[in-house]
Structures are given as C-alpha cells and as structure tokens.
Image 1 (spheres, rainbow, N blue to C red):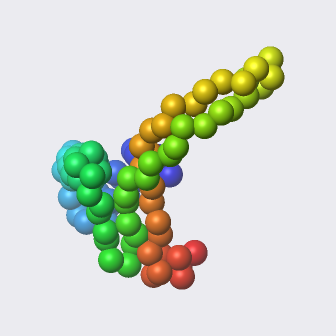
Image 2 (cartoon, rainbow, N blue to C red):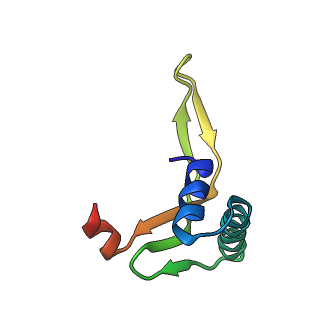
Image 3 (spheres, rainbow, N blue to C red):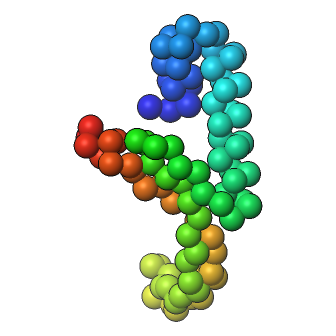
Length: 89
C-alpha cells in the first residue's frame, strides 16, 4: 500500500474527504518526525513505537572493486511493532 492508497482508505473509513485525510496523514508524519529529531520517541499503544537508533561507524566493502570503505556513524529511524499488532499478523 502506498500513500495514495492509504489516504483513500482513511478517507473512506473515517467519512472525510481525501484532502482532509491527506492533511491528517501529513500532520501525523510531521509530528513523528519532529519528535524523533528532538531525540524522543512516539508510542502508539497496541500499534508500536517509533524511535531513533544510532549506528556506529564501520568498515564496508565496495562490491565492484572489493575496496574497503569507511561508513560514517548515523542516526536511523526504527519501528517496533506492539504486541497487539504483532498478534494480528
């Protein structure tokens, strides 16, 4: 499912227009992004938790040449499914 399909589903289920569903989804994404940038986490009980994880610097290999390259440390977004969501899958 892509963003457009999700917007259509939310609009149909909630009985709102696609424009309103798009605004709600964009607002949700923006709120989660701001919380993660601030070093926090977002927990939706029964659904899951969005958090930030740090990846250490490490050595990798260029697959074409086999040359060793350095990969910088960075922050990545993580999602851990909640118990209820995991149980439904």
